[in-house]
Amino acid sequence: MEYARSVNGAAIRLTSERWVHIVENHDDLAGKFYDVLEGITDPDVVLRGATDECLAVRRGKPFDLVVVYRETSSTDGFVITAFQTSKSKQLIGTRKTIWCKQKSKRF
Image 1 (cartoon, rainbow, N blue to C red):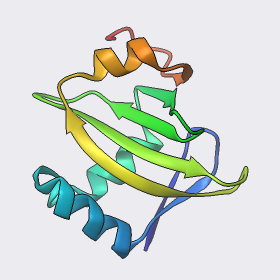
Image 2 (image 1 turned 60 degrees about the horizontal axis):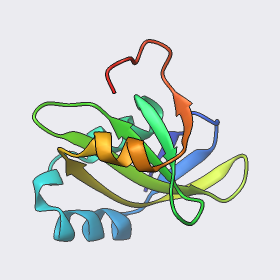
Image 3 (image 1 turned 180 degrees about the vertical axis):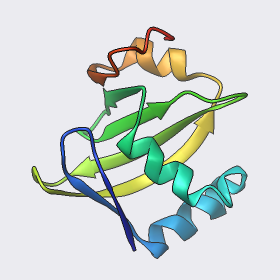
Image 4 (image 1 turned 90 degrees about the horizontal axis):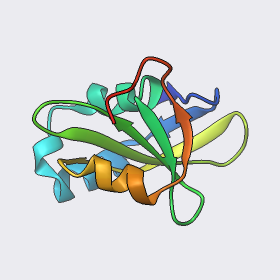
């Protein structure tokens, strides 16, 4: 199990069970374990999900990385899933932005 600190300061856990779930459903992320953790610690934007989860979006080429996680308290949380997409602008257009990197004008 590894942890990444969210932009809100919560320690977000990525368990081996969740990692297996992610790579079984999104095999393009195999070998990108630390990229997923970095997506939490250094996103370009964080969006509010449909049921109070957070979607950390980190720009990349050719695809952007989205890490979905839930903060259960101000100090704790866990990863739900992660995936790559070329449609992050659509996500940003339909979800509430809860945090945005100061220099990130790329969306």
